[in-house]
Image 1: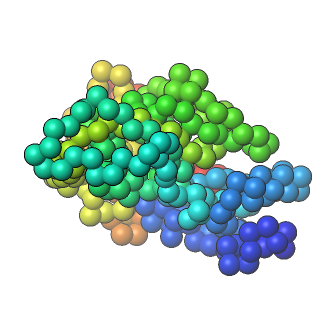
Image 2: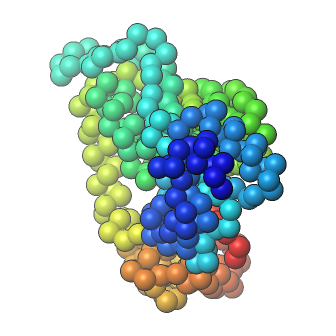
Length: 316
């Protein structure tokens, strides 16, 4: 794998790297190689090399919706590095456009181009400083913009599809494409990026001018709801199951008598049954067995099929 060091620099290539360090579940064995990608050209060159040599590779973001097998990952895990973070305004920087007591034109739209590796929480805080609204729902999601676009992430009535205008994607051959909102074919926790396994590189977002106070107040309100209702004190991958049409996964699990149900170190959260948490020493096998048993018992109880939202990496 000397070629990887040539492409990325030795400091960006880690051998036998525990994936538990790179997922919010804090679970997962070692990847043969874990690489931080800093530029699009690096990514393209690495993909060409890995495909030519028939070495399996995987692209990850912040690892916030990921469960990695206990035996680890064979091949190469590529993570978008620090230079895939940041944003720019597509016209004059708005400044802090709304001071307290100043009239605000809430019909004014500001276009922002943000890179896929940007953390959603950091973007939310930055946009609030510029008095921009529309991103509040995403500011508490522990992931990156790329992952959010890939799966049309949403919370508290908002989804990425509501603010995305255009996205730049890359296919597994290294070709670049621009997709409009409509071409992204957004649905509930899905997009054309997920369907065709494209890599999200950046996204143009349409945000509305508001007042800084209103944006911060909304973010604080949603943050308080999260702390009250979600088990943020434990490692997890967020909502474990997709929401079945016409139902709420957490309520179905609770009604099946599974609040606090545990397999090894994995547990159905007592605070929110839609979350599977790592109580401290959970393995990926614990989590997958818990998910299997929960889905089986909910199906028997209600007739509803639960589909996992968390993505699996490695062979299960």
